[in-house]
Length: 366
Ligand code: MRU
Image (cartoon, rainbow, N blue to C red; front, side, top):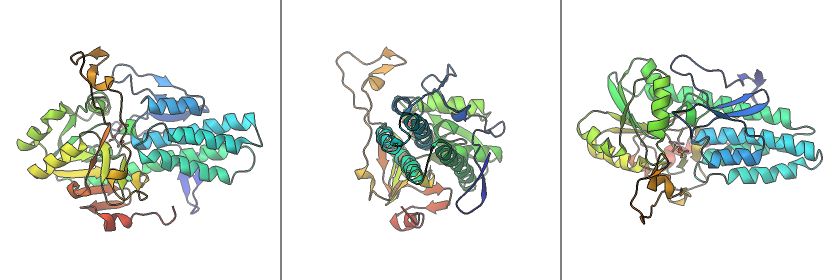
């Protein structure tokens, strides 16, 4: 399927088409007029899919982490708007727009930290404002465009980021930033994919990423599935890995980058940035422009999602903590811009990001 973009260029909007042996996974697909989500709670043991039918079910899938990762959440919500519009137009051909606005507000509240969610919803809402008649076809085109643009951005970031690595470098990554977390290919994992494909990487280490274990369950699954060897470490082993000079880079993604360059990402990112600076290991953040939030001055203003204590107190459904213990479980942390060596976006690489350098990436219109 092809579509014209606003500049009149022909654009592919078939993002479900997969790449080669090192790029074989798509977690979000629009198939036979249905949204199909790979259920990430069940990986790596079971590959099963969910087919949400309305905005309530899509919001539930985002909240319950059937789908997770900043860009993936935004793309899923965009398809959620298509499902919502289909239902609302059938319910009220004249009043669908107001009903859809309620659905969009509900989708926006599913998870608070990743800015890609509100970014994608704003774009869908703006697009819906100009539609006369049945909105479904036009909104589906816009959702697929958001999806295809993310995939294309990831491929570009892969090239930009891989270009910074030297042959034989080894890297540590955190959380899951791959095809599972995006429209495909991945952000930080896209850089690792591109570098691996070019033959430039020695070893890839992944932190297990307690408590939800995105590294152990998802990144290890994704990389082994895509024939990229991976070595898992406990999160606690990262500083020692650096001290023993086994990695030259930490490469990871972001859920939000504020105007001054602060990076909000999976809990543990800040620890890694501090360890990198101490050991002279370079720290690379890979994030599409849809993750940049120019409305917030710095990271302290971002709402950090607090997740249930049970994620810390239990492991694989079994209690591991002493009875009576409480738990504090923030899902993300804030890394000050000053600890970031490189910010890679689809529009280029920024070394030592700061407010002035980021401003150059600001879109012309909000
Ligand atoms: O809680 P999650 O799994 O949604 O958190 C995901 C992350 O923190 C990723 O690092 C981030 O979204 C960037 S992914 C491309």
